[in-house]
Image 1 (cartoon, chains in turn orange, cyan):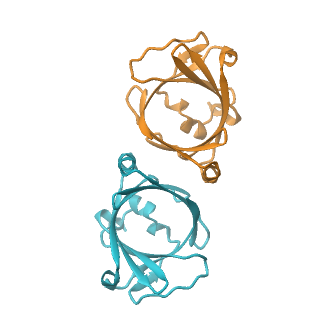
Image 2: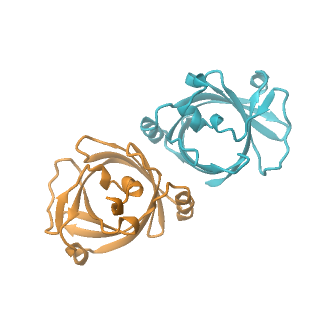
Image 3: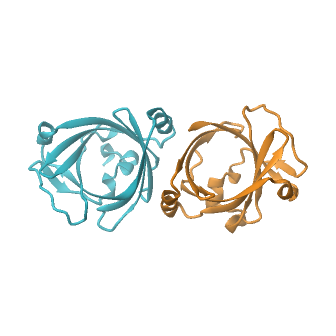
Length: 157
Length: 157
């Protein structure tokens, strides 16, 4: 599977998204390459493994080439073992807001204190409802890329 | 598919391997990461795509963690487009020598002039017949890793 990923990213104003969420998952992920022009990510989510490759983004930071394959979780564990230092773990809350679903990542470990909400869109200009807990937009700010958080975690900011 | 790859690598004395070969293939490959501890390779061989991840090798350079999946060739082409500069192309000759098959890579482009023969073994101590054209062993010499040839090609040696 490969496609152009179009998404916008925000900080949050408060924790109300937790009580509004309909599901949450634990995610652990490492990078075989954290270079933002060819990021190679290994993820374990709900005991499923995924290998994801992301290219560079367009100027606004909204759109990015993405390729993803599900892989056996045992293989994902072996691949995480050879990843760059700085494996990321987080809890992802899923929150419906009218037609869209926000993914809100509550980081732990070296990124504890950071919470980032993302919404995936089908076109660059698509509008979406903004819940009251949704804060400042940080789309395209490279330091919020998970690949960068593994190298320069929130605790160092 | 993942396994420990056990192989030994040699230079060659002469071109007799060509007439002894039973098959040959064109290979084009790029690296999403050329780091030798977590190399991520995209390969196109006979119109088939492959994604391969290799970990660091043991001290002798003989054994290395390897993970590989076949992927659609159209996806391999998209991934090669975002690889590091220095895509490698070569012709691989397959040569039987008693119980083993040597893979002899004749590089072109920036690595023209370099020819490397490899044999895959099922254990570190396994013996094998050495054809007269087989030259000096270079197993474990990092500069002969294809990932390194993409960054520091033979023409610069």
